[in-house]
Amino acid sequence: MGMSTLDREGHEAAEILSRARLTVDPALRTAVGSLPESMRRIAGYHFGWLNADGSPAYGDAGKAIRPALVLAAAHALGGQPGPAAPAAAAVELVHNFTLLHDDVIDRDATRRHRPAAWAVFGTDDAILAGDALQALAFRLLTEDTHPAANRAATRLAECVIELCDGQHADSEFERRADVSLNECLAMAEAKTGALLGCACALGALYAGADDTTADALDAFGRQVGLAFQLIDDLIGIWGDAVVTGKPVGADLAARKKSLPVVAALRSGTLAGAELARIYVGGDPLSTDDVVRAAEAIERAGGRDWAQAQACDRMAGAIDHLSAVVPDGVAAGDLLALAELVTRRNR
Ligand SMILES: CC(C)=CCC/C(C)=C/CC/C(C)=C/COP(=O)(O)OP(=O)(O)O
Image (cartoon, rainbow, N blue to C red; front, side, top):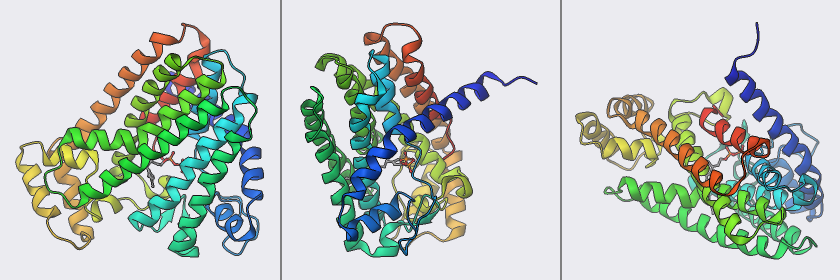
């Protein structure tokens, strides 16, 4: 029996991701390898290259979606992957810096099927390792002789500031009962969309595109990023822990105001009111209450809303892209990655 279209697309996206991993890994390993032993140990553990005792490991370094977007955007605008590799590595370093810090902020003890770095090395050292990764990202760009490197560094810096603002809003929303859906969408765009947008913009710049074209690629990536966060929130509630490498239901247990949750709370339904009652209080939700909360979100329409929003964002993303990228095969990788985002289960 032949492969269905979806299987074929999934296969293609998996290949694009593994190609991106192969392209950025040497730059990542060289950068991390240049760190002093103290930081190298923690960063190496976080990337899955080392065990906690410093011995070699073959762990999960992540899906490489952001570097793949850098390379695919460069390709879509007529560039080659090689010259864009430092930009792809810089974006992946920033992503991993935010993961190290995010796990500390959220006290999430599991990351990529293993104890999070802070749970192994302590919060202070995990924060420092995150800082070191961010510094490596900017060093890669400032040492790069590509004509776009300077503008790329400026865009990445603006992006990091936006990520911080988004993460701040995320934490603030935990303490507020009146978060609107628009506030929540804006938070997700800043926390997650900004870096996917920046990845696409950097790819465009490294292909020699002007700032207007890079802005359009940024807008494309942001919409893909919003879809990515919507799906991330859905996986966090209804995903499979074995596949995601993170405990399912942790966001609900921590009473997080993820997008499906806010959609349900704001739905004006009885199920939404039931969820609001479950969400009152300070302690983590019990396992029973996590199950009840997930059911209430579903009955209130939060699950369907998030899925539909993710599809809408994908359509919006493609509109941004078709405004600047000529038709043809060059945009195929970008589209396959965007598709993957809405179909992923990890
Ligand atoms: C400044 C600061 C701390 C900001 C935090 C921003 C933050 C952590 C946003 C969450 C983004 C997200 C869904 C990451 C998972 O990416 P992924 O599934 O692609 O991860 P992978 O690399 O493991 O595949």
